[in-house]
Image 1 (cartoon, rainbow, N blue to C red):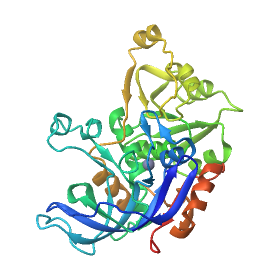
Image 2: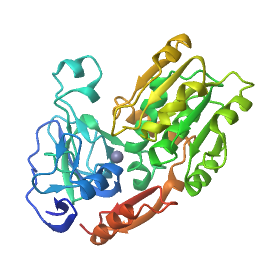
Image 3: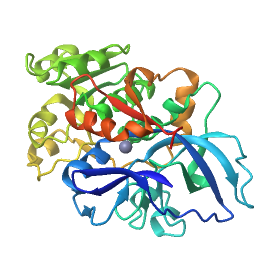
Amino acid sequence: MKALVLERQHELAIRDIDLPGEMGPDDVRIRLHTVGVCGSDVHYYTHGRIGPFVVDKPMVLGHEAAGTVEAVGAGVSALKVGDRVCMEPGVPDSGSRASRLGMYNVDPSVRFWATPPVHGVLTSTVVHPAAFTFRLPDNVSFAEGAMVEPFAVGMQAATKARIAPGDTAVVVGAGPIGIMVALAALAGGCARVVIADLARPKLDIAARYQGVIPVDVSKEDLAARVSALTDGWGADIVFECSGSPRAWEGLIALLRPSGVIVAVGLPLAPVPLDVALLTTKEIRIESVFRYAHQYDRAIALMASGRVDLKPLISATFPFEDSIAAFDRAVEGRPDDVKIQIRMDAA
Ligand code: ZN
């Protein structure tokens, strides 16, 4: 099968590669239609590794995917040939203790697309468990279907926050995930979401959504703005989506007593935390690793019209230009949110 293969750090190729294609009774085979380019795919390309995960042999990239079912295993009843679907890229061991407890996203044995040594889906077809494959309603496009994966991270963050109706949230970092978190927080009941960043173009994109208040932290003091908006009380929730150790310095000061910090971004270095301040305000800290049980509800929100992710798709490349798509993602244009690849020609 033709695929976009990361041969090693800095080297991509479109070439034939042998991929596992054997179907079990509970699997479906999907012809891929659209695959989004994720920050993690780009990081493997530019750095060859993410933490302990090292690309030490050629690996197909891509894990944000939608397509059409073209074969179903004998034991599959919930899906049929021709269904338009999107897929959860992480498949846990269903018998593991974490899976049995419902937190399959932190199962140590989870196999996640385009995380070494597991191949991704920038190719023509993939075999996947039906249990991790979700039908798309007619009014949700393939392009939107491929956005469900990053949006599910926002859904997980909003769920972990335990939002109450009318809450005020702050999102630090207006990258793709920060914007997804802001939209999930609004859909989850926040009255308003302050989103803070240094990059004006992405703030402007986020600000097109009703309820989002952009704060350009190169020009404005975030704490003063949050204080003014909440009559000095503080925000109910802060979502840290920048991954910047420095961003953590002022987080507790943004919160009301007994507010919550949700850690979404992954800082590359340890972060100092003022535990005394944390304790005297009784701040709760939650963290998010990918997602569990979010796909069906993410799709329901998109189908209802409550969440529109289409404005976040900045550019779409045909598969034969997928190396150009990655090079554009590496450029990191300030007004690019999500770049996608159409797989029709794969
Ligand atoms: Zn992703």
